[in-house]
Image (tube, rainbow, N blue to C red; front, side, top):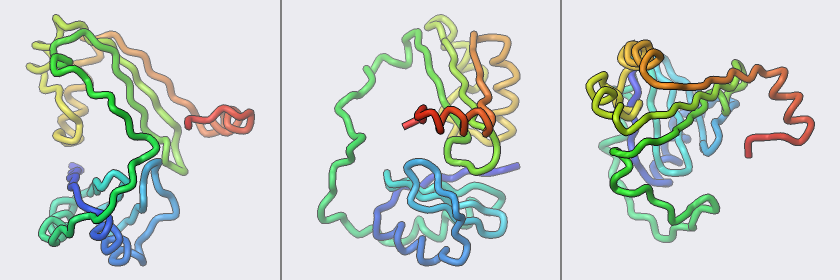
Amino acid sequence: MSNSIVIQTNSTVIEDMKQQYKHSLSPKTPQGGIFMAKVPSCTITAYKSGKVMFQGGRAEAEAARWQTVPQTPKIAVKKSVDSHRYAPPASIGTMSIVGSDEVGTGDFFGPMTVVAVYVDAKQIPLLKELGVKDSKNLNDEQITAIAKQLLHVVPYSSLVLHNEKYNELFDKGNNQR
């Protein structure tokens, strides 16, 4: 079973982490990432947002090392180019909605996979009963079990974009940014 732990920290701590893991840095960094490091039984990914994700069998232990690091306040924060004022309505959890997500966008190996789903407001109680919630709060085993049930409950569409096709589209000027 693979664990995922996400902590929120600041740029000073992230730089300390990068220095600590300098011999374990991965040459690939996901979109929005500052660094990715692989240590025994744990992958650490730090993001520009200040979030750091620890994945693997030692995720909890590795994250615990950094959760006790004193947080120094940021002096000046430059506003992100991607920032916006949009905030979903408070009632979003009761609305019919379409959502999508992708994986593999920051990977060297493996395809990009995109899935979109439609959830009717009347289905929300059933989804809650099945255990649907933010994937950061679920382990791999729970996600797999819930996904098997969801396939029969909600309409969805999935696309697997293999590397060859991605490269072909990218070379033509089509990219995800």
